[in-house]
Picture 1 (cartoon, helix red, strand yellow):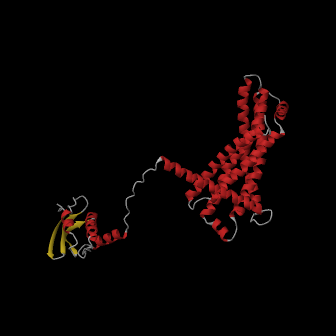
Picture 2 (cartoon, rainbow, N blue to C red):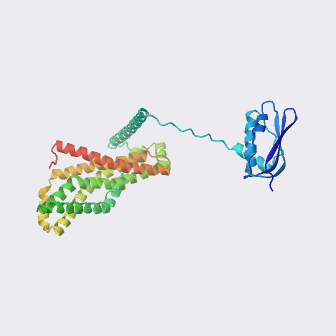
Picture 3 (cartoon, rainbow, N blue to C red):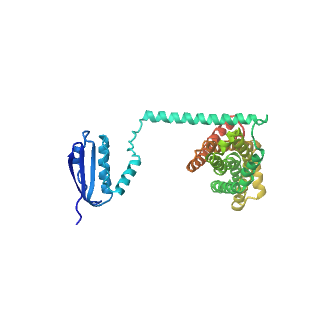
Length: 377
């Protein structure tokens, strides 16, 4: 049967305390109370000699006991004598001393309502200041292009024209046709109740030209191109490529941001016109197949339903959407952190910001167009 761990305390010489350990010091055995030895350790002692000749076996239970005793000794300026302690135990104690102790994290009290409002206002002000600074940098760099003082790369600009234009046609085509089919199908059901199926052409044409063509193209580009901009620039931040450009005296706004924003602002109106045509084609499918309207009659009704000013209204909206989507993608990419998770967060934030800006700007532009009677119904 294993002998329980125990210790004896004696004082053979003045200023020296002898601590003799015996028994089996292994986990599973009750740790003997340390009150007696801790009570006798004070500033009058010079050292504490530890003897382990009576030990039969030991594991981390011995280390825990010795560690607590050593910490108490050092609080009183006493350095114990560990010469008779097993070498393995001494190494474990040295390793414990080399590892810094971490204090318990204190729970931070939740700030009150006024404090939370103030912190939110400070964050909002800081975000507005960053947006204003970034916008100002873009405007200043844009003014340097005509005088040849900007590091604007034409080759990159034409590459982004292709990436945001021709390469985006498949997804824009699919979404535009389906939106036109959905609008035509919903209009056919509702207008068929009144025998006014011919006005499905008006519904589809006006919806696509005024709102859906530009908005759906903008949202598609926010998820496709805006996210790509944020990921590209964020990765360049992580790999310190943007820092390298600044070190070489190249402004990253003109070299990286302007080609992306200008390419998207120029190509999105063309994608909008393309989406308008395909959306109307989707409405034609419903009108001809479900409502027995002839193709000529449907196209004549469509031509009479829309005006050039209404088409221009959608094109102007799409140009604004292109600027906003490019701005949001580049802004979050340039403000990205230095980790992989930061790249993902900036990409997500760019898409969310781009879609929100599209919806808000659409509401503002629609009100302004109605006030100034531009393309009004």
